[in-house]
Amino acid sequence: MELKEDHEKITLSEDTESEETEEREKWDKKAESILSMLGFCVGLGNIWRFPYLCMRNGGGAFLIPFLFFLFFCGLPLYTLEVTMGQFSGKGIVKVWDVCPIFRGVGFGISILSTISCSYYIIIISWTTFYLINSFKSPLPWTLCLEDWNTPFCRIKNHGPTDVSVNGTQYNVTSSGYSNTSITLRNQSELFSTPEEEFWQGEVLHLSDGLESIGQIQWHLALCFLAAWVMVYLCLVKGVKTVGKVVYVTATLPYILLLVILIRGLTLPGSLDGVLFYITPDFERLKDGKVWAEAAIQIFYSSGIVWGALITMASYNKFHNKCLRDCYALVLAGEGTSIFGGFVVFSVLGYMAHENGVPIEKVVKSGPGLGFIAYPEALAKLPLPNLWAVLFFIMLLTVGLDSTFGTIEPVFTALSDSFRMWRKRRALLTALFSAVCFLVGLIMCTEGGMYVFQLIDWYSAAIAVPLFGFLECIAFGWIYGAEMFSRDVMMMTGQGIPPLIRICWCFITPTILLIIMIVTLNSYVPPEYGSYKYPPWAQVFGWFVAVIPLIPIPVFAYREIKIANGRTYMEKLKNSLRPNDQWGPNHTEERKRYKGENREYTGSLLENIVVNVTGKDIS
Image (tube, rainbow, N blue to C red; front, side, top):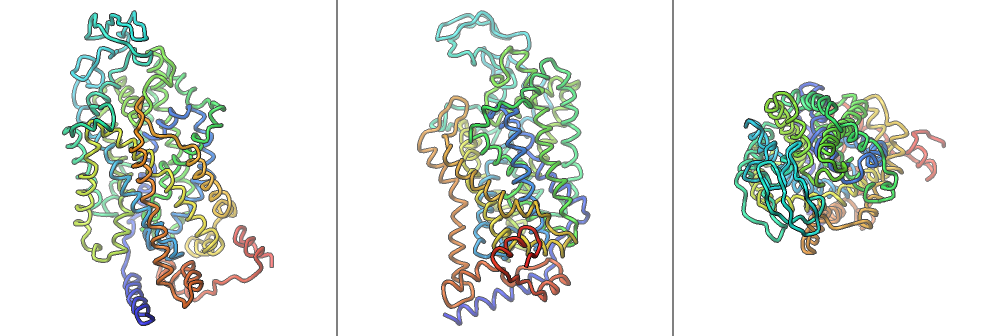
């Protein structure tokens, strides 16, 4: 048994030696690193998901918990992941050489990223379909005379009149439909905009629910295939190509969003939408679900815990001054979320004004918000086809940036764990893209939106805050905030500020633990519009939520088993300590690091004080 363990250690040591002599790819310029991280953070989570959650959670009330979690969760975790990635020069699996017992977190993040990209790219396929239709004049989502339209379709000043409710038949006059006899069910169904009908009827061909999954919609399937081909082309060349593309994709969104906002603010009713966005409904703050979703949104829009920040920072030069970059990038990314909300709500205010209904009733809650409100704004601009093409190209490139950041950690983890894939990047990318395409085809069916909503509802609800919690425990207490601050001092010449340390050690893990408890306690089944998901769908959703957690106990057991030591307690202690592979991603600094005495002795209180503040009170 001892001989077998020694053989394993020798093999691992030889791999380590070759790893250290193998030069890791680096960004050509610092601007590429900054723009790549900004491009990943400023993605669909900011432009599409954030306004959608604001609509669902009472507009301005959502901003209060969002900003709270930004400063006490987003910024500390962002700083932690960027610094650990740059210091070690390793991906999401190998970076856990710092605390091997938690290596399963890296594999769990890989699984979560794989699940996410499998359904997230369907958004890119929707964007592709809109981009193709942007070349048609007039824009098809502005019409009420097409095959997908209903008698309720209403263009400005051409809506249904003389109607009632409660199951009584009435004559309705609509653009393109004269004296059509219909049955009205409730007030919210009295009319709909052509943008909403294009989304529901032409893009989705929406069925009645998961029970009627329907046929594959080939227009979506082809766009889905095109999306995966684009992803393949972006990823097959790796970091060198991406570093050049982001000069355009990371800056274009700001220009176009500003133009759309200026136009939106000139429309009647836009001010009401903005006020709805920024005015908090304090009663909503009593709802734990609002706080839980605000916390989860921080993970989506800042990119923390998805592995992308660790992976992209590992391509930085070792002595890059990354702390100030972290602060600027967090503010820029989340500022874009808030800015994008102003753009959307200025248009929603106009739509509510035109239809004479409250803002919260102007469109159904759902992932289609960005594909209804934004096309409405584009149709009001001069040369609408030009702006539509530019906008959806922007949305497409933003989505590709985010997807690259989601998938690249998976490839890095596979390459680090299985060296055979390091020289077979093209084959790995092709196999991964093909499998994800085939699995994701179910979201191109008539019931695909219900599958999308189900996975989106469950996939990150528990795994993301748990992974963030374990990161804080590992670097805040087990390895130690003071020890890691010394690492960062070696790397940048500046240690970790005390406030960030306090967050790592106390505030952030406490908040994340509360989020997990509140999420479980305030759980409600998912919905899409008026559709209620059946029990079997909820069971499947929880299965999706649990899958990324499985590697944690599996790899904890494995790391304890292969750790040095004769007794279980010795093995457990050694699996909590950094192994020989942990250290600076710099040859000279690594030698100095290995020669330092990094042990700290003192009482428990003295250790806690120095860990949190950096001040030795002994």
